Image 1: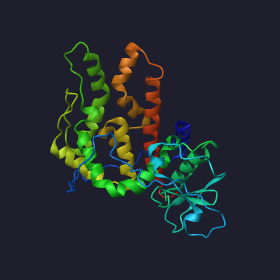
Image 2: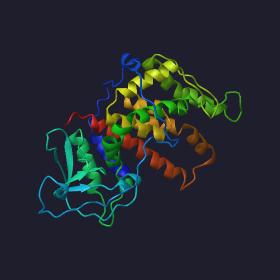
Image 3: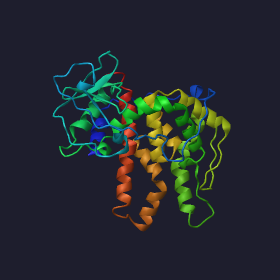
Image 4: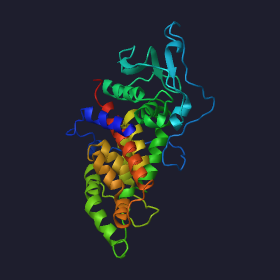
Length: 325
């Protein structure tokens, strides 16, 4: 269901492919920054379940401008747990009270994030896409794992503003272990065919990195990664610092699924489309599948999940850039 909804949203988004969202001059400007530590998990976001509260549903005759006319998502929404039965009939969108952004309505209730902030979205297109996720929930249960756009919106509104320096630090550390910098040994009979495909399909992306940031990236054969030039790291840091909260949430989500900051930035800058990114992410595994066959209940589920995660973050990024329309 999530894949179907994302597909529909992506087709309806007016994605301006010709527009360049990255420029070399902007990316090369170094910036100083904050310090902090980060966990070793694939994503830089964590969610605290402490003091978690259930979904708030109040009577329709209660006073306006308070929690009685809103629905607050519990923290468990961000962890994927089923959060209760469907309690609403109609899902709509409307302009925010202050005229700055759009909100989603469940019947008469305004949707709020787990920290009770109004779910204020930057564009009507994104609001309608998230409304579609809520519309397709079943009567027997609201399933957050079928609502990736809603989850990304909450992340952008709540977690990114509080942890921006940590997210950027996390991404810069991951840059040294980037999937696209790993190169299978050329002189090994078991890996020479992988090396050839990597050169053919990944080198154009590395050439883009050099063109975009002015620094030629290093490739290495160690599975533990290596160390990129400090100038490249600074250039990437400068670009990340110029993103807004929604863009940074998308980049972080893309990196967590792709294990590649470069692929995430390629999507962000319009260099890569969804299908291109997925092919690069799965390059080595697809070669193994071609050779040894696909394991049902394993490979096929991994592929489906990857498509949802990459598509959701890309669609969220595209719809967030609709300039309020």
